[in-house]
Image (cartoon, rainbow, N blue to C red):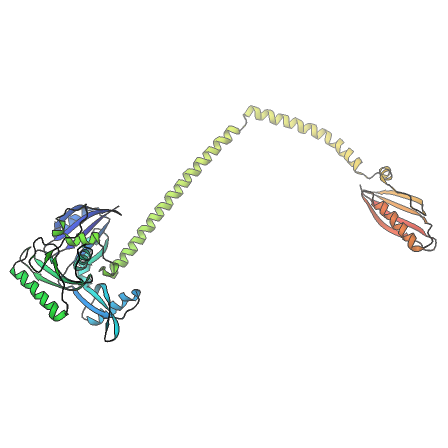
Length: 443
């Protein structure tokens, strides 16, 4: 939901309509008619989020140009270049345009574009009070463009080419529409609201000009904000939102049109410098809002962490032992450590004794099965630090050296089967088949 204000610079006054706009509704809040001085007071107190402006100056130019049928992204650039070529006398101006359509002329396709040119000097002057009061203007539209949007969206069956009249009191604006695009406008002075004989004569002259110069023949004529218009005009009956009074069309048609049917961006007449400054302002504002949101998030996280730390501290305090119980535990621990200190030397002595290798223990665990023709004549065991050296000698009564070697390997395998036993040198004398085996045992 947003509050919008549409400001229209008419010939006799400044007219303003503020409305509450939502996705599905449009509700009129107030409709005012002000002077230039009263506009300052209105802007100083108004709370609208955005402002839209319609303007209908007499020095605005309306041109219909022809360009090649190019991509939509290139139309604005080509239109700008063509109008600068056509009007080198203009120093700085803004352009609002609308594509009428493509047609074939002399065997080639051209695209007709209806354009409106307004000097930036005038537009900057209109923006000054809004800038002074820090109000964002989101669009400046030519009043004929705004009214064209209201006309083409009416449910009535209207011809493609249409003559429209807009009564501003001190001035009448006549405009010719083709497929919703403004081809031509003419502003003529008038004594008051309504249509006198001079006004009707100006209408006739305008129709003749369309026939003779523009080669355009309007298929009908409507008076946008006149209840009883003269021929050839007929009364205009647009759709009016339920949140607006029915009579608002008579005095505030441009404001109603801009609220109901915002023109496309191609018809926005805001100077490029103002749009650039507004984008920078929006960027700074959004960045500031993001910084504020990030700061609030950090503060929230700090509060949450502080709460968690407090809760954890409470849990630790509840688990902490009372001082008297803690003293009892420490005393018991100290006594246990004293007892441990007293018995540790005895335990160390016993461990050292049991850790040394034992020759009787080795002989008890040594399992040597009888081997055919193998006679062990001597066995020597000698303890050396943490190991026992074992030496066996004997004779193998085998006729062949290969059989004797096989039996020697079998004897070595039996020794290796003892846990902690590692075989060393093994010799076999081929002359007399005497052997010797050395091994080391580590428990």
